[in-house]
Image (tube, rainbow, N blue to C red):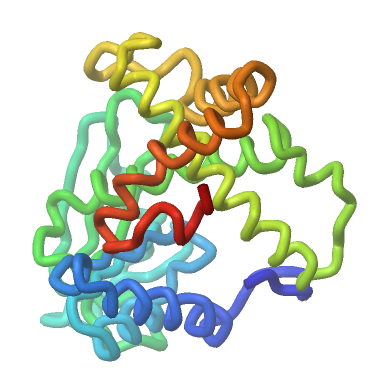
Length: 258
């Protein structure tokens, strides 16, 4: 969903976006027993969002990065509040604290666990609030969100050049994003296939890739388009989507007629 409004989004907008996605995922048989974890940046750091997810859906947790301007108070001592910024000021690199059953903001009554951590390789501390049963690992869960940044770069400038389309109508952008999302998945799958077949080297453990899966994949697909026949190209794409087809019990020909 693409909003035509400028500025920050609201809780009602978050609900309209998340509700159909969560419900669709929970209806998939192979995902029905899996935990869904919503991870959000500081713009979405509202305890109302976490409370709505926890009280509305089963097996849905939330981990939110919270702002330094927020106030915390313990459920045991609700009259005593502490500003997150004052806690951050006392931290040094290597520190790690877990505050349990905290109320975020003065307008909320919903308790969450808050993890404050400052890893040595980062310039600033990370503060996250979570509804997870394993709050100690909430920084690792939140860290998975960082993968969205290179994806945005790939969409906007690296290859798809979304910004150069000059499309501004929200509905047209939504339609364009559907094609881009599908193409992006195909490119990443092609990049993974190159690593699995050792056509390119996997990075050593703990090291980042010099070239991302997306760029490796789109280059492989470009070579297929230039050199292969249409029949061979269909076979190539079918092989990429086969794992999804098996998981969803769909025959590849229903997606890509051969």
